[in-house]
Length: 263
Image 1 (cartoon, one colour):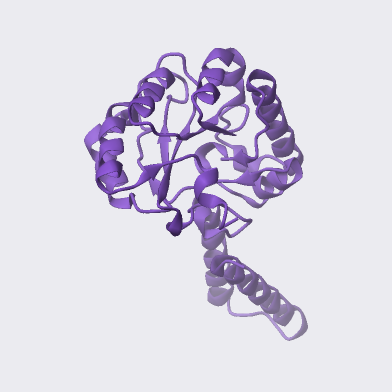
Image 2: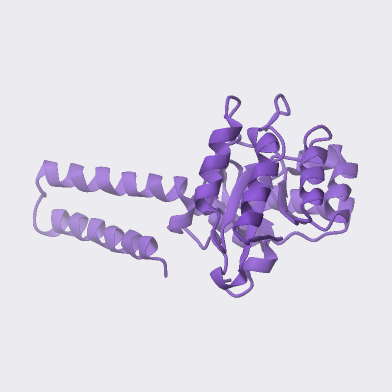
């Protein structure tokens, strides 16, 4: 069990112990109760915002170091404008990546989805629509959303999806339970380019990614903007990222090539 999840259990038990003391012995000091509550809430919020801690469920966030490979993963596509540019850069480098597609976009652009698969890349889902309050959805709503997106990919490209990256990357207890019901594994990241921001600088994206380009890394990038209203900085930074990986002797491979022995 991940250390952060053990800490959650310990802190939960501690909270129950304080409550039992208040009931059977007498009220605890207000400062102690308030401090315990504040700390617990803060810990839970961090657990949702930082999926690699695996507080509320299992998350694949890094691969096998011995694989010698790096998984570049792209969110928020497919886009008929920017995704083909990403595919061109990958093809020139003979690299294979993993695309976490939005079901709604895949439904509108099945030709781009098929181009991803036909080029030898892997596909995961990023939900059907990019709901920024996804972490608050009920487990049933999460499971239904995941199944809907999976069905779109299977119908459009003949691929049955096994991986899911929640919108905004947040993993709440509800999100984790919904993914479990839908039969998919949650995927996070070990390196984040922060390229999905409108004013992101490609040079800064490159520097962030370059620092984390090590064997087994799972890199979070974007092949499209959430609303397709700008070009993510990673599209410009990608050729250099691929060149840096080559100079480091790293292979750019689909996600399944680096997580087989760590699942």
